[in-house]
Length: 177
Image 1 (cartoon, rainbow, N blue to C red):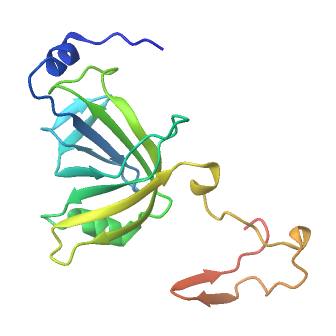
Image 2 (image 1 turned 180 degrees about the vertical axis):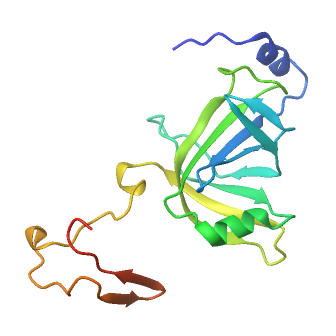
């Protein structure tokens, strides 16, 4: 598949040193749009300048994006607060790579579309690392399984029962609830 490059991209990649920029979209309750460059309005959203690093991203022979790690600056502790408050497990994440400082709508290329797996806030609080995995239908919604008599469960606790499993607390709902 061929692609026509805009003059901004052609100019940027023709420079002696070319450094890509990244857009990162984290779909928290209020979506977070971050840019590794200055604050940019792209694709109908304002992408805020942020300290962004990517580690371990690659593409396998079939062209499928593999997992990687997104490392975000946390100097003001806002990213750490979001991660602790809303979590990152199964949270949808999109990452685009672009060149230049004012990309056209079609310039950035999506290099990752998947979900958060787990996270780590560094001891000094300076960065938050989010491990990512490729999207699959089962990672983008919860619950992933329903336990019903139809699916082979012959004994189920009453609706409203609370089950504690490690650090997880599950409250059973009536079927369809």
